[in-house]
Image 1 (cartoon, helix red, strand yellow):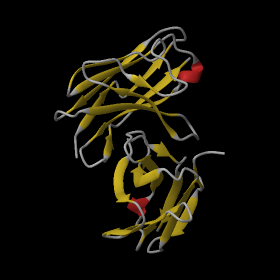
Image 2 (cartoon, rainbow over the protein chains, first blue to last red):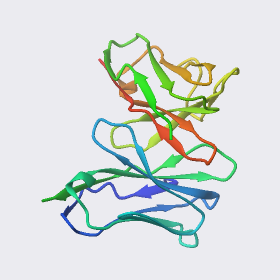
Image 3 (cartoon, chains in turn cyan, purple):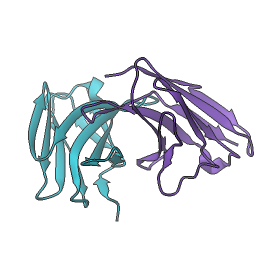
Length: 111
Length: 113
């Protein structure tokens, strides 16, 4: 079993839709949770970063962490074609530097 | 954040040869990392590049295959040695900042024939 599970998609939604992206994990030592966006042929770009449980909002993006369920989510409101990319979740244990990634979910927002 | 550049951006190499990938950061950073991104697989940490000492390798990666240099706080290289087609992948460097955030370079796309 992988430490981090993420549905690879592809996920196709119409412009303006609310998108929900999710990851589950098995390692209870993870305390830092990140979402990266990766456009084709580019490096991953840090979108959201949260510590422990709770919600964090930044513009159209909301990250949620539920440590009791070992489940994290990224919500994108009013999705735009420019949001079309692969979204990677990543996690890190406290006191370490190693990021453990999901495989990424490919999102396509259609006009 | 940090601005990170990598060279080359892509390369096609023959089996048995070696390729050195460079990573340059626009500011001094303590932590630099090298990752591999294979098709359909998760980004995987190869090693942490330590300035002034040997790199720290993750399980499954060895120095003979992936030698790393870190001569100063803004630069690192990763060499992929004695390449085989299985080494075809995207190689990414990243830097860690004080608030635990990691930022990635644009990647080097390697194809081994």
